[in-house]
Image (cartoon, rainbow, N blue to C red; front, side, top):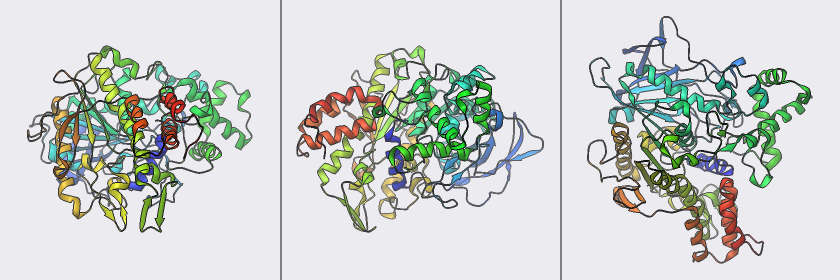
Length: 607
């Protein structure tokens, strides 16, 4: 994704409970005869989801990517005889368990390579044979492309309240989903097997499945919106660039995403310097596996080496990446390892990168777009690294200096917005792509827990918006630790959730969030509507100003220019620390941030 920002955001998400791994299905659901459907693969039956939505859990959309199909483009799913019971919400691709997982020890590998399944929700009582087809919304989950799965989300409430059909597919994670190696390219069975982006092709395969089958569930295959958060939003951005996805979707929503990619050389051989490291390359991992086994991979030809790689167990592959991470940092961060994901391979993603396409809408899948970030994505950085914190056991946490703590997390958060929202929206608009809509999510009403001011400590942090999109504040993925969504903030957050779901579903239906699904909200203007660039919808509760348009476009440079006059900071030592942390998080912006390092770090000191 974005180098160390992936680890920082994931650790913060653990603090938030946003990456809790427990699924939301609970007990095995009962088959509901009203949900019998016929699709291309055969007959299937589902169950009831939240708010009596029709739900089908765990439908295979591709063949299991195992054995000879590991590190190959996904193949279409095979059919079945009889009635398939789509009742299993537990499928997940291999990943390390986190601290919030209840059925596994932290660091244990869970999941199976046989994981390419998806789930579908439709409004209760909707009859595909009689009723008008509905907009379709396909959610790609976050988790740094190393954790997460479809079973974290129960989308019945979104489907039922907004009259949409919702689909959530799995996709391969980590080095099983992205692997750039010449031995794999040279032994490809099909042209797409030569990619480094197998997981991106999983997301495309899910779109193809929707095109061919969603009408049976009441969805309109000509009205498909892709949306996702964090790494899921990154994967949405990659679908904008992937030629294989052309015509398969018609709107896109990116929540806290990015457009950064890796070169093929970096993905295979590593970075040009350790300062620019954004993860571990395939050849570094293969060398680590070979060293552990005593294998001489240097003398193997492509066929033998590809076969040897496919014969490794998931534990061996993940263990090699984990060891590389431990050797580099001496500690195991959340997610367990740093493999390289989205790669400019010239097959699925262009060699020049994604943002270079924005100059010409004819060069990418230029559908109506919403892009946004949370106001305080990384406000909690000072909490994550612990260098600024005091605490009394688990009762109270507070920083040494609130002003410095706030600035330390605020500048990286604003830079994230600049490169994920304002700059691409401006580039698209100037290239002739309309409409593009932008937002900032501001909910920060957690309040205090014991003696800790959570609102001030983390604010509108990364991933805290998930429950507002699904309407499910009770799901583990939204707040696994139960720290944020309580009775005292229920009224405001439920009102904001209604707002978000209404805008999102109206956009899915029309390509314009407008005044929401029921015409009840403030008009959301596009980025350049009215002749001026920079329209941004602020999403907040009624007590904090509600949904409202502002115009305050920023760039990476205008954000960092403010450092020089920020009165909260004591001097260039503080500024140097902040800009050094920013470039550490966003190595893909190193050339743009280095002038500020030269400016503020002349004395070579940081706090």
